[in-house]
Image (cartoon, rainbow over all chains, first blue to last red; front, side, top):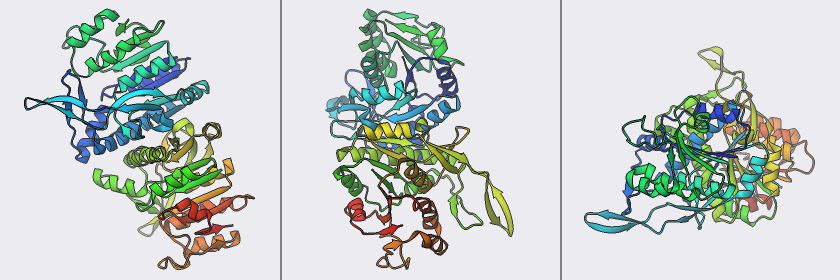
Length: 263
Length: 263
């Protein structure tokens, strides 16, 4: 089984991913983002997006109800269903699901994010949380019956409220629950870069003991991604890759050794 | 088994529907619309909506790609997922699906709609079609495993393209495939009305042989609904109702005999 995370950037080659998925014989579970589409839609609708940076240095989007509405339209609606359509056009019987559907991804709402504002530490509470459990029975039936689940945010919290969650955390939780052989993170870069401004500086291997150092070194979304991936380095026989989602054959390229191997 | 169609009007009491669904012991399949939400979103996004009236007198929305995008956001995204969330909050393990997911509802694209424009009859072809097949295996597994499918447009055509389709046609196709005991159409009126301006003039029973006459008499969406329902009147043991979706307990009220019985 392969678990493919398709980043939500505007330059990810979804057609290439869909063709690659069609060409693989294995069971495939897809998780995708849609952050570029969400930002575009929020701007068109005049919904303000606020970013928070926690005291520990992780950035996230402040998720209030209007932003969750935008996510439901951009992630669960437009991106999810157009991707499902594209997969069908390539011969893949895809089923799009949000974390809400069948409580596919259950989360615990964050108590609050500690942020620094005007020299003070404040606690900001929004509609976000960490994924804690997945509906393995539903995913298992879909995979066993030749269907390809295409999963995206939001997820459902302990009080059955739709909340935002990092897709990378969802990927790691799904990987721990379903034990795929491959976990492939497709992003808008050739992999983890030694020098963020030099696409040729791909780090081909990051051993687990170096992950913490890399987390300190990189910023923004990559910091969070590495933090989520760190949970997977203990699992025997699981190949974890970060690779370029913009190439002609993103998954084949990743499996052929381009990109960064974690572990 | 009950098949509930929840109309897409702005005044449907979704909370009441969710509570009613939670209180019923039977398997339940839900199909919902979102036309009011679609129109609101299209207006906010500046997407123009054009209505067509065929020479045979049926009205429909001209569905081009931007309109399908809006549908994916309004129907499959925001309305579907917020309704799924609401059902979970009432203790119902709902799974939201569009017709694309697992090719749940397969359609045949319309060759074109004959319309009169400027004294001429023209053929207008858009992204719309008739539903012709459903994924019974997927729906059957969900229903048998305590999950409540919540289905909505768009559907997927013979070339795997997302197309618009009348939800009432989807309902009738699902009813013929799954043979529910009850098919309940919840709308923004107390039922079929003798006088459209008098809510007290509910017709309590429409025998099958009177349906054609009623189709000629009513206009707009109701004409189309009756046409879709007509296919069900042949099925033995299936109770088909049109009832008020705005009451405190829309499904219970319908089953208690309020509204219009067809058949």
